[in-house]
Length: 225
Image (cartoon, rainbow, N blue to C red; front, side, top):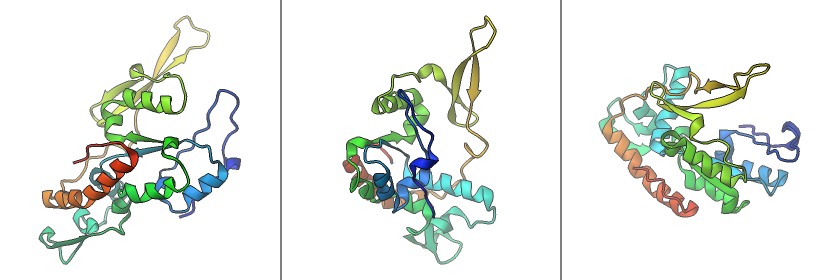
């Protein structure tokens, strides 16, 4: 995987502005903490995490949409001897959907370069149930006024995610501002497959010690099952 972190690819910031760059693979790519550190030691880092079991299933759904002939989730998540989930053996820790969810391992690399107070962790679950609350915490961390609040969100029951309201001034009009709505694209909010409960439980048991270590490292209990 080639990951580029360099100032020349970022827009210039003027007084009162922050430049933000988003690449999900940064958190899990081994070489990135050193590269970010060499670019700037004063950056603020935002990490969005969610229940690693749900995240793995979501990852599989995204991948299978592009490659419809992928084996079932159960066969990807475990080394199995045949098509039966009764023969589950080891968790497939080399599979990216599983490996990414071992957050404590990835965080350990970042903490070798950056202090914990430079990092802000967003709960993916609370980002859905309380987006305004999560955004308030994020804006505080970034030193920004709380511009984005509950007025800017509404829940889209079809997608299962919040949508964002943006109020835009209307030129040459006495109407004031108009409301512009943005929801997640087609690739988000896809239905998850029904996964055997034994598979779910095995994965939860596998991730639990890593989750607990992650809680201790961050000082945050995300209350994943």
